[in-house]
Image: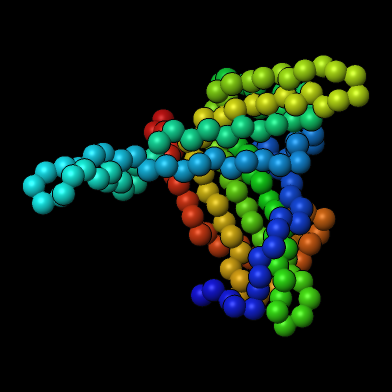
Length: 179
């Protein structure tokens, strides 16, 4: 159930974790991958032209680019071609409470994938390197805290010990590759 008492405003803070260990040196923003369902064109008598029909449960390739300020160990730990990358983003969403004050809601994004591309960036005096690692995702899960959940502190789940709420699954795309 959606609460009419909250106005979502912004991401207040976030942290990135690689295999459960906090990453350092990740750039200030991460653009999440676009999720596109596979489609096929349907045409024939009574269709009145053509239409794209989604194939339920099938998704197109998803890429995630992670930008690093410099080539710190967090970036280098992702580069092994023999292992998968397990990346988690945990964010504190700032919402305005119409009954007075502000509140914080949890957001968690879990991505599992393989390294597809590595760009070491540039070396320039006094500037960030802007190195990037691109992952081909095999798993994507996005959890959003429900607006009406009971408040409780989750120091491990929210950056800077923010107050938040227990997360629940709202969207999930599972593209795991069979072993």
